[in-house]
Image (cartoon, rainbow, N blue to C red):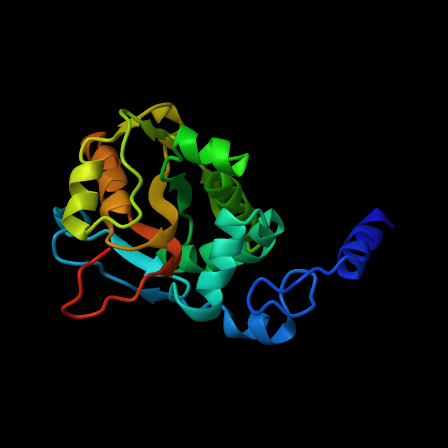
Length: 233
């Protein structure tokens, strides 16, 4: 009964759709349809060599970081609408599906969340998102676990507003491997919420590759569209 009462109370108190601001518990029907997952390969700029050699680590996004999906991700990540994890984990799971093969044992490796971000948001949202995606994939018979084996090796600047080159420099050598045993006997896919320049995913791939766990691919909820001739961010 509580599961019914709490959302109904939220609606009476003026709950709004994260996509358009209309009256809704989480998303209205139109916005839910607008962000239906549509996985596709999304290579970032050529500067992310770590994703291309020695073997391609193919990045897949469930959608574009624009319009309704962008507003939903912002609401989830920056505005405290954490119940949207139950929406966005489907997107992340759908972006992992292209990497699945029969009989595979797979570990989803989230990029690390900084202490600053955990304090700001109250939890490790990406880890929760990865766990939700793994549950969905196990529900269709895949052998998928989550392996939070990456941590920060040093402090970094906030990535917001940095160019592609600045992001790459900011993150160079920023991650380290911990709890490597969680990867034993499993292939890996790096997961994140947003792919912008690819610097974060590339740093995760570098660390895993150096530990002889070259990922099969990378999966994200959304990828920021690239505008030819613009300053990459």
